[in-house]
Structure formats: C-alpha cells, structure tokens
Image 1 (tube, helix red, strand yellow):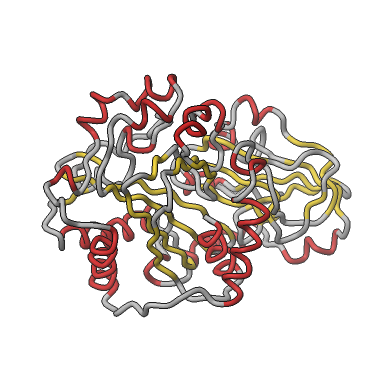
Image 2: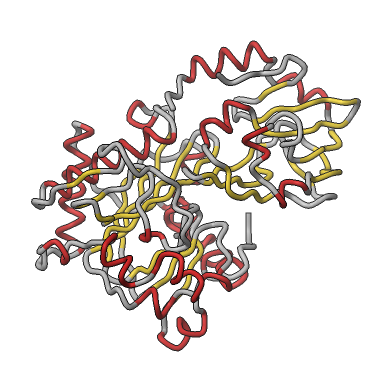
Length: 258
Length: 132
C-alpha cells in the first residue's frame, strides 16, 4: 500500500512515468477501503488469533481477503491518451488489458458492461460479493475486484485477481453483518471464481503477472519496460509505511499522516 | 447537462467558490458530481483547521473512486456542512446550494485571481473532454 501510494503521489507531482505493478503478500491480509469501519466490518479478534494482517487502502471499495491472489496497481496521469477518457473509461480500459491477459491463459472473460446488465452498485461490505461496473467476470462470476483513487490529474487503480479462493475465509475473518449481506458461502459459490476454480491449477503469481503484462502490452500497443523503484519512490514509500500503513491509527481508525 | 452558475468561481480541479466578503464557501461542481457517480462518503476538515490553495482539504468516495478535494483558496475553515454527515447524497442532488462543503476565511483574496469564471470553467470542461 505504501509503495502504491508513493507511486501515486509522485504521479501527482509529475515525477515518474505511468507504472503497472504486481505484488503479493507475505502473509494472509485483509485490506479494507479508505472509508470502511474496521471494527464494524472485520472480525479483528479472529484476525489476531489467526495471524492475519489488516491494512487500510488508499483507494475506496470493500474488504478484500488477500490469500492466494495477485494484486496489481496502475498509476498514471489522466492527460495521457490511454487514461484521458474519464473514470469509467479508465476502469474499462484497464479492464480490457486485464481481460486480454486472462484470455491469454485460455479464460473466457467479460465485464458486466459487456453483458448489458449488472453495473449496479455493490452495497455489500465484501468486495467479491457482487460484480460492479466493469469488473472482470468469467462465465458471469467475479474473478477480480478493483478500486480507484484520484487526485489532481493522477490516478491509482488497485485490484486483486483470485488465483484460488477459500470460501470459508469471509465467514471467519469478516463480521457477521458483513457475511450476512454478501459473504455467505452459498452466495459466493455462485458469484466468485478463481483461476483454480476455472481449472488453471498450475498458474501461480508469476505466470499470472506475466500473462497480465502481455495483456497490457497488446492493448496499449507498446512494450512495457521492467523497472524498480526510484530512490524518491523508495524514500516516500518508507515514510508512508512508517507513518501510515504500518500504524494502527491509520489501519484501524483511518487517521494518519497527510 | 451540467450547469455552471455565473456568480461562482471555479477551479480546474472541479471545485467552486462562492465569495461573500472575506469568506469563501466551497463545494464541487455539477460536472464533478456527474462524473463521480453516486457519492457514498466524505471526509472534511474540522472547523479551525487550515486549508491551502491547490492542496487537498478532504476526500470524497463515490461508486467509482475516492477523489481528493482540492482547495481553491487558503485560509481557516470556519464552518463545515454537518448536513453532509446525515445525507451525503445532497452533493449529487444539489451541488451548488445545500451540497456545499466548507466555508473558509480567506488569507489572501488575491488567490481568487487564479480561478475561472463560469464561461472559463465550461470551456475547460469541454476542452478537457472527459467522456463519461
């Protein structure tokens, strides 16, 4: 989260190029949206007992359980041609890149927009409970959840793609009210899938990231250049990790450094 | 079709200002609320805090994104619209009137020279060409 926000902030200041980043988690983690109430929506006691970490994202949206997933982030400026079409167009554009990447693995992918239906607001507290606009679907079931943040002509879009999905986890790690509204196992069975659920058992994070990168390259029509964080990005990420994302005051209460 | 009242000043970050003496009432434009979609939550500064021109004074969450709110002027926040805590949807339904966000006691009214009038903002929105 700290690295994503650093990339976003430096886009804001026009200091770095648009960046596609893939990452995973060293341990099971629940991430909550910027405005979510951690106490109300996450079973904090169970998280502590099971050694599950909690982090509040810079983007909005609902709770996501990061277990066997691959996360991506895209940071850029809205004056770049690929991202200049507005909020929905940016979601749609990045969705096309991700969909192309997943199609490269042999999946048949669509979005609610493609099907002319859905596109409704996800009022459930659990991100994967229901597809919202331009989310990626495989045979009508959600495989990826995304959220965006914008500031002064820069944007950050973060998302999670499911490699495998343990349907017991929302029951254990999210609060009862949340589970009742959208995290119920039978509901999830119908609405969520994963690479493993689609028979792609051998695909891990690296292979998925590689396929997704190809999807972006094909849709953008340019090769992407692999890079590492600049000194300025690393330094700002460290500052954000120490002063914000590594603190309970931010993760639990939503208050922290600006 | 978004509307832009002529008695307001506007920023390229889609906030508006209504000036009354040394006080500036601030909100987001009709264009901005249309682009954001249904607004779900808002975080605003507390009274007596300080905001700076071109810096973030809060965050708004819609169905599509969280977006930083950028202040058109610098000064002390003297009033915050508490009604938004009860019904943030009034920003969608009435962005220029009951959907206002904060009132700032301006440090330097000459900062208003950096802002756009209604015609300038409308031209900016058209040139910006955000399609959705």
